[in-house]
Image (cartoon, rainbow, N blue to C red; front, side):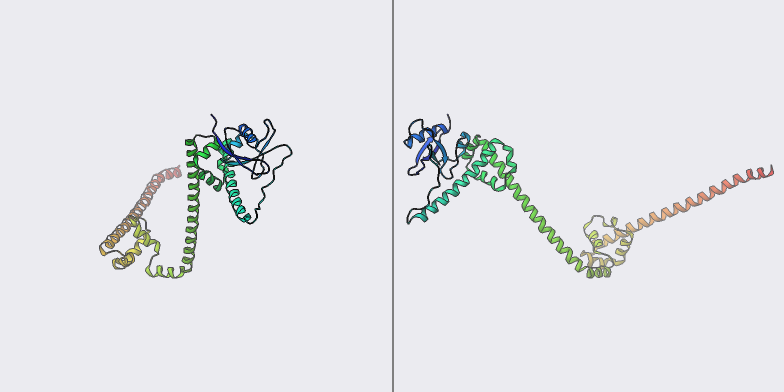
Length: 306
């Protein structure tokens, strides 16, 4: 059994509106003609009362919201817009008509979207956020009726659309936060450039730059990450100075300096070992060359004798 649809109908004079509940477009024309006192079998044209749109498609008729106002026109009758005057109460009727038109246009908007989705569900990706929001705001039962979907499927569709809207909002907020962060970084960099001279003076007075301090404070095994020159500079400062620079107690600072000293000594020992190997290698090469020369000398002498 087809779903019953409540509607309203009038003739071109709009003197009276009749409420009907029908299962189809054909039944609406038949019952509407009867309610308006037209002869059976009279040829009529069905239009929307608010804008005169001709309604011939069954699917479009079923997609329209409940209690939509229709007008039945006979031959030579034409649709005209409703007059907006009524003596001293014209302002009141105009206010009511404006509100009704706004509601009707909103309803037509989401019905048009629903009709579009029923033909091609993939078209949802091309809809604006305002159009998606209108689909979410529609009662599930009405949207299901317009789409021809079960209510559960329609509810899932609305949930998906809502997630898409939430994701777009999150992306917009993330973009705004990123832009704000970039502006802050740019401002801080500008301030750093302005105070660059005083910072360089501070670094030179201490003896090493702020990068070295960051390594000492925040990195594990910082002695492994510093160059030989930086290690020598740290050891040159001494425990008391480094305590003030790092903000550490004496025990922790002492352990750090001992680690730096041990690392520097290890590197020096490696350098010395490499030098020793180089010297031994050169000495070995010299000895080998002398032996070769001694071996070659008798042969050369024998050649000369011959």
